Length: 262
Image 1 (cartoon, helix red, strand yellow):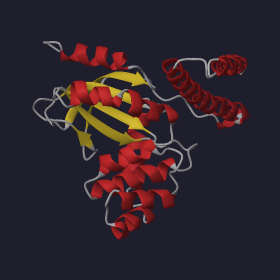
Image 2: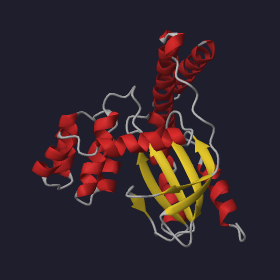
Image 3: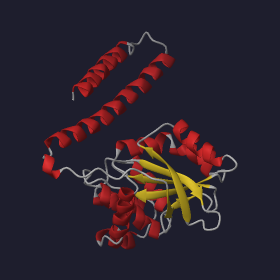
């Protein structure tokens, strides 16, 4: 834990330094930069708090309860099935994301990287984006959030709910989820029945099982591969990207697969 204590100390020093630049004598542009830096510091504190919580829980867990390590990822062929999809069905590359709506790193990917993937690859027909649910047990509202997204999908608004959940990661209680359905113009009675009955619990469990089979631990996780030209439901996965990575990590993997002869 010492390494994380040092990081917190550095953040405290940085925050204190930022306060020195907030005086009225500084120009407006500098003040705006300070505001943005303060926001970044707050985000870093949230991420580190999440990491610290995970490490503390791991330290408290008895050795006998430790789970076996997931299998390492090996290239393999998977079926898309009925998972929510963005992009062209016959796009040459398919990217599958496993995510958790309460995971701060998943939210970071949604905010910072997904818009660029959308603009550069999905909207241009190069990549088909597939979303799969991977709610972690440590996040008490994540399972309901995943089921809520799928319930919204029954009414044609999976992606609208997906966006709403990632933009409100701290308000994912059942009452919040039902309120979001109303905001999105869904039939409230139908949505409430779907969520209360846990209609899509088996679908979420199937996604969790497939993530484990692929060797995932934690969220987010991304698998990239060539779409089978003879059967677009099949994807030949060959790349695994673990965690919230930069757009360049995705560009490198996708562009490599797009080269002729792949």
